Amino acid sequence: MYLHLGGDRLVLLSQVVAIMEAGSSAMRAYAARAEAEGKLDPCRDGQVHAYVVTRDRVYASAISAATLQRRAVLAGRGLLNEG
Image (tube, rainbow, N blue to C red; front, top):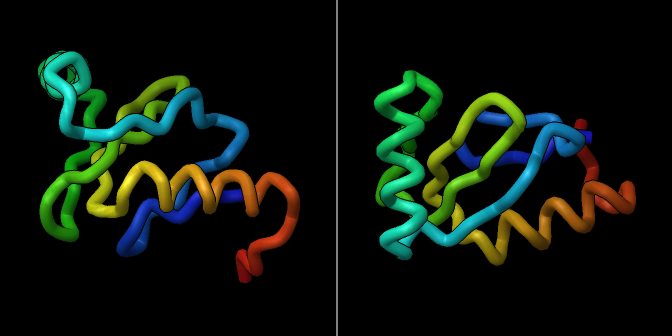
């Protein structure tokens, strides 16, 4: 199953470690470190509302963390049409 991050970006749900709100200073610092290490996939669709942390990258998303979490739960249950 895949998690749709907005635009044309998808990640394997099995690779997702965390879905975090973008607003906290700790998350902004984590994202800045990921960017410095070349591991941040920036948001292309507007203002960053959430970060999706996978095993090897951090993805910035314009979709809220709550919506991404809901999508992840539904996809994990096989309730989203991924095609």
